[in-house]
Image 1 (cartoon, helix red, strand yellow):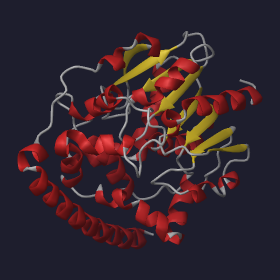
Image 2: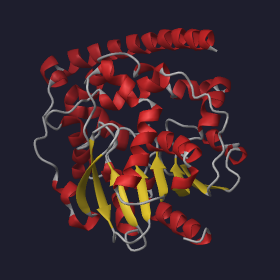
Image 3: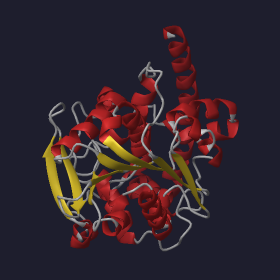
Image 4: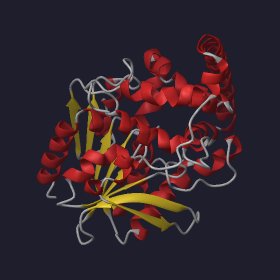
Length: 354
């Protein structure tokens, strides 16, 4: 197994270097045509955009976790005596990805949307930069979730997650069944499916090229900073990966996500170290891949990075499983079609006795 992991790592590194070369050529071309000054310039965001302080979304809070000592930032809506709905965002996002759900579910839940470690106003562990990737292993990330639930004063939660939040939520629910009453995942496949699917579907391997790119030092950081975080706008509003609903993101919404990467003292490498740690850490040895709580998988069928086929076979890992497709929705499903997603969540939670 150790030898196989080494061989896999060498192959992954070779693929990463190939994509790195292509991106370096692309960035060089953009720097020449757009001008070096514009290419390397970006604005440090000193203050939070006003939308991040909208009282209708909830109140800002902080907790310091026991194991890491990191101070986590979150926004919470709803009374403290209500059951906890904990919402985990993805890449390249922050708590604000759950703005529509914070409003919708506050009457029935204490809805809490944290910034994950290294994102937004949550602290990033030392050392900063590429060398800090070991601090983003899955064991660290799932420990964060467990200690968040405890620090918020709860013994369990309804766990809601999207994208990289889902990458963390799946194993957390598997390993901590007593802490998860219900699981809602959006556009993130079960860990027992993704690797096998990618190995047998070259089309998904090509769509996942960015994961290989993120293994390289400094180049992903340079890419996302270029032209004042142009890639953030492209991801959320571009033709290939962006929301299909044209008014899903305002300019102020985009500024909210850019603030995550451009606030003073930010460790921009943190968001890429999630991907680096996954590749560099040996896969989990536990044979348990079953989710014992009821689980709902919501999937925008126009995801530009993840194929719909990744949903197939999830019921083998989740006995009480429900799949809901959102036609015409992008990868950013809960922001692209918030009314549809909220409706699906409410109906499912009602049927499951919430």
